[in-house]
Length: 336
Image (cartoon, rainbow, N blue to C red; front, side, top):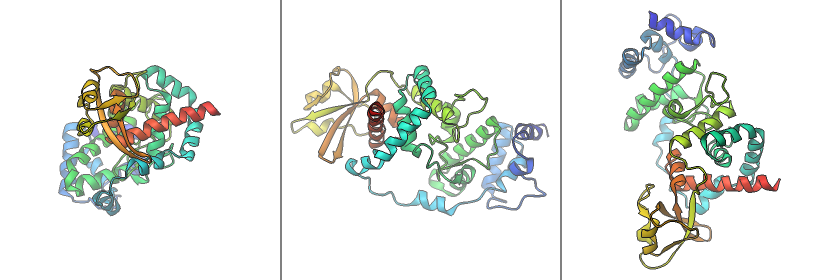
């Protein structure tokens, strides 16, 4: 009973009780009514995290299983686009213009984030631009529907999504918000920066100091949260992101990294025929990669900050899109 009162007390100031929790007497049986998996999950949340079991069951009576989500995540992966086709998706005049406007509108918050976390304003703006076009495309699924559908009806990654569902319910309780109202992508990514719930709880910050973390409609909190994420993953202030390279010789492709981890040093790459356009120490570990550019193959060395961007999304092309958009934003802002 005390746990139930605690749950109610947290939410009562923001929403009506029936709207968030439902009750056995008033709620309509939903897609997860009577599910053994849900009962097991609720038991865990009750036992390990102090939730009121009957009230949490009331939440799940309102949760909807979304076939569209299962279709989306089960769809065969499209052939990965080459860089020459991937880059134009994100480096557009419209996205650059909107980014310059976003930077101008939130200049003070961006400057403070750069000062406190060491992450350049243009990189923060580029992340939000690539992820959601500055809030235009943040997702229309209820997060609780997305995470429940994938956690209970998508066996290949059920453990991951149940963990995210747990983190989501904890963040809703922490932030005193109605979990039935928060929306995101079909995979449960949320807000302007598209944080998963576990990332929200680990890295999101109340950057405007109002006592709540709101990455859905508060750009200041979104800005601070992106900067916090990058800082916690090791962003090095003032250091470059990538260096273009020329390659010669038959062994050049032996230098390419098998993944996104820095597996070669600059000196090792030089011995294989790589030469950087910038002065880099021989002992510097880098990620060596090749992109299919519009004018032919492009060889690049990714430095520590490049690796940090790939922690946000594990893709070399994604990191390059963020980096190059950030450069274009600086250029466009300077020309205004």
